Every structure is written in C-alpha cells, then in structure tokens.
Length: 320
Ligand SMILES: NC(=O)c1ccc[n+]([C@@H]2O[C@H](COP(=O)([O-])OP(=O)(O)OC[C@H]3O[C@@H](n4cnc5c(N)ncnc54)[C@H](OP(=O)(O)O)[C@@H]3O)[C@@H](O)[C@H]2O)c1
Image (cartoon, rainbow, N blue to C red; front, side):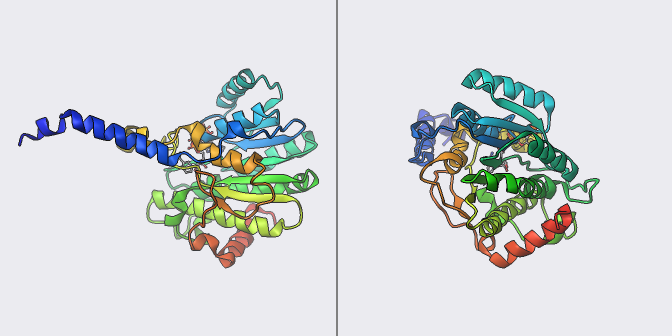
C-alpha cells in the first residue's frame, strides 16, 4: 500500500483529534481555582518568575484574590509588561515589581533585604522561577548556573524571608518542582559544578529533585510555626521553558504541545497549595498537577539526603 495515501487518510486526523481530547480530559483535575472563594485582601504574596508562563498565571490568580502581589522578576522590562497586564486584568493596583536573579546569591540577598525593609508581612511565597537546558557554567560566586537558578537561589530566598513569614502565620511556601525529579541524581558536588550530571537534561531533573528534598526538610524545620511548605508538579505545560534548547527540540516541543496543559492550567496545582482551604495545614508534601497528593521518588523522600543538602546549601549560600 502507498504510505502517503495511508497517512493522509482522514481517519488519522480523527484518531489524533480523539487522542488529543482524551489527553486533555485526563489531565483535568477536580479542583478549580474559579470555584475557590479564598480572598487574600490584606495579605502579601511573592511569585518568582512571574513575568511569563506558569508564574504569570499564579500571580494573576493571587492578584484577582486581592493580595498585594509582588512579581519577582529578573528583567525590569519583561516584569513591567507583566505588571501592567496584571493590574489591568485584575483591577488590583497593589501589584508591584521587584527585581531578582535567582542565579545570583547577591541579587537574592538584595531582593530579600528590600522585602524585609518594605513589607510588613509575607503570607505566600511561591518559588516558581526556573530554567531548563542552560549551558553548564560556573557563576561568579562559584556555583553551577542551573543549580543556582533552580535550587540555591530559592533556598536562600526562602530562608531570608522565613522570620517574616513566621510572624505572618498561617503562611504558605510553595516550591514549583517537576515530575522530572524522578530522573534526577543526588550529589551535593553538583552545586558547585563538580561531578556534574552527564547530560543537561539530568541537570534540570536533579535541580528539581533538590527542590523536593529542600521542601521536605524545610517543612520539618517549620513544624509548629504555622508556616507550611509543599512542592508541586505543574504538569507538562506549554510555556517558554524550552527556550535554551536548540531549534529542533523546540520544534518538536511546539508540535507536541497540543497535548500539553496551557500555562493557566499549569498554575492550578500551585494555586491550590497557595490558597485552597483543602491544603490548609498540609506541609512537607508533593502535589501532582491534578492537585492530588503524590509520593515523590524514593530519593526525594530520603530524610538523610534532605538534611545533607540543607547543610551544604547553608554553607554555599553563606547562611550558616
Ligand atoms: N513547562 C513545564 O512543562 C514545566 C514542567 C515541570 C516544571 N516546570 C517548572 O515550572 C516553573 C516555571 O516554568 P515555566 O514552564 O513557566 O517556564 P518559563 O515560561 O520559561 O518561565 C520561567 C520563569 O522563570 C524566570 N527565570 C528563569 N531564570 C531566572 C533567574 N535566574 N532569576 C529570576 N527569574 C528567572 C523567567 O524569567 P525570564 O522571562 O526573564 O527568563 C520566567 O519568568 C519552573 O520552575 C519549571 O522548572 C515547568
């Protein structure tokens, strides 16, 4: 049979459409932000990486709920564009922009100092900023770029803001991780670029594994303070996350993206952890993209690794 004729048969189109619809139906969770009545008037929230992708929709939801919403972005220009869009879209004038580059511990310290000086409280911290496919590189501070961006920056930022969050309790920390954590490897030498993972894909997965280990240890340390910490998998989401990959990978990602969640859908599990009544008081857990509780990989559940990671991170960020 002629292959061209076979593949151009209309049944291919119909089958693909049905498959796409099936995938979309399967990925819809039972919780919907629009059905959640939580009002955040009088509360303050920070969302890192809020100028695009999942972070922008998280910030949009929090701003709609009347929170003082701080967009923590690394680019003033892109952050300003998001700020104007969010203020216009929500009618909330209390959406503000602050600059932070999570790959630079100096920038994180500067940002945290600004927040501590200017804000009276902090009720929600969403560590969303992240990047994949970054080239292997050592920062001026001696840290590996991907690990600094996705893990050490958020680790330092969270710790610097903890006292304010404790004073604002009940407060919630949400760390955006990924299902990809399960292919990550654990080695604290990765943080400074020694013994680096074989592939940059594995580097990304390893940073996400660290996000979950960090969250678990943080939750243990925060017991009894009224501040909760959880990590989430947003799902497979069509965003700019592949921007550092070559054109072929980007093309394949874009072609396959009809099956992916939209950025708005990808924000749901994070918003659930940040605002829902159902998640109140839950801490140290990992939530899947449909907002259900899920056990992360065995490595991600190892308390020994979590505590070792914490100690090393304290040393590397100058916290200890
Ligand atoms: N998309 C997915 O399928 C997927 C799946 C699992 C997990 N995630 C996680 O979801 C989070 C959001 O990703 P996304 O998909 O929305 O990607 P995205 O569209 O690329 O957005 C990433 C955001 O992070 C910011 N960012 C990156 N590096 C930064 C740095 N050094 N300092 C400050 N901000 C920085 C970006 O700012 P600029 O615009 O200035 O670069 C952007 O605002 C990430 O943590 C990612 O790992 C995504």
